Amino acid sequence: MISLVPVVSGKVVKLMGNRFEFTVTGHGTDPGSKAIEAAIDEVKRIEDLLSTFKDTSQTSLINLYAGIKPVTVDPEVFHLIERSLKISDITQGAFDISYGSIDKSLWNFDVNMTTLPDRETALRSVNLIDYRNIILDAKNLTVMLKHTGMRIGFGGIGKGYAADCAKQVMQNMGIENGIVNAAGDLITWGTQLNGQPWTIGIADPDQSNRPFSALNISNMAIATSGNYEKYATINGEKYSHTIDPKTGLPVSGIKSVSIICPSAELADALATPVTVMGVNVGLDLINQLQQVACIIIDDRDQLYTSRNINVKQ
Image (cartoon, rainbow, N blue to C red; front, side):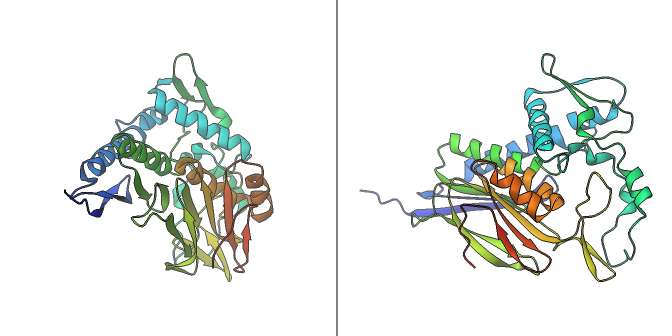
């Protein structure tokens, strides 16, 4: 009789410009290497569709023909844009994939940034950002950006979508337990080797290399948006690299937002707009959504949580 030994397999690769980590547990000598390679191929496939750095991507074609003509896209790209617009609706524009037109030259978020641009300049920099000017034709699967110079990008939702797809690929290959970590956007399923739920640490906004708190989750995703990695301090106030798409100015007041829900795509897409919306409005939104929870740490290190969540510190 052969006894199958519990084994953990894992791999870290750079995909979509970010660090992706794939971890699976199972029994035998090699429980998941083939599945991990298939998941990596799936993320590469999605990157080819969505990347704004590849001229051949469908995103780049949509941007190229902004204000000119509709572009036919694959069903999955069409439906991802469709879901993005729904999130824009529920966040009142705090999430907006048409952010790609913003003038990057206004922002460098480092020690050299000592002043904010004036409000008029900032407003001009976001005048092409408006998700309502993304025109979808469901019958013909076309996407058109209404104005010349508009650009879409999937920086706020693409990693989460890719993580969900990678998980599905591995589950389809029989992997019952695992984690896909797409640069902090995690999706989990099954359990650890000991049968316990996965323990996920939430980074301390002031010391991102150590956890601030931990959650036990399984078959759930978590995404965190924080100002602890890229920010500017001006006149003693800390400004996040997150730009409010309505004002063109960086947001302040919140150090980090973590969203917990069944989908990495949705968690990824909600973390940034809650940062833009602020503590009260953000929590009010999350409390209205089913199977979605939220943890917020503000600039004064005050912890806020949505209903029905238990945080261990």
